[in-house]
Image (tube, rainbow, N blue to C red):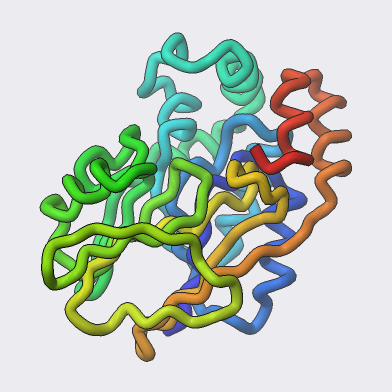
Length: 243
């Protein structure tokens, strides 16, 4: 099976549609790693589009915040303002869909979490120390995570050494063998690695390979839609810088 691995759409419908267009005929099912809403201008439209696809989806911290499961006072002022708007905008159908999503799941080959296997909703796996301590919290060879909005590959080798590197786009990475991995495909709707293009990956479960990709989308159009809803200017500006 070929799986479209995506994360952190954050109500950015334009970016979501660009990923689907770029990856057409490359996958059989979607695995979404959470944060479908928050920050962006089209939460209900993104939920509706996801529901049209053959998919498995996880819930992220912004999804939980939209549901009232997280105190948004812990968010920064811009994220808090955007979340108040999201909560007021979210339809009953979208709310009910998000409420059913777990933050972690697994199958016989892979583990999938929004944030980390140790803390599926909130922990950021963004450094070697955090990655190293998380390998003990899943049993499969590979765990896929989102949340940081940064594509990265953490590897635990046979000597128990942990290293990290950025993906090479378009080149399949073999996940077979004795090494273990924690891998982030990056963010569709709000990249934070100074590359404004939407990030995604395609997992081939038969070949046991993962290929990362980037695709440009119409950032200005998303910004226009955010302006129309009077979302915070810093959230609007950051999209064009990928940060």
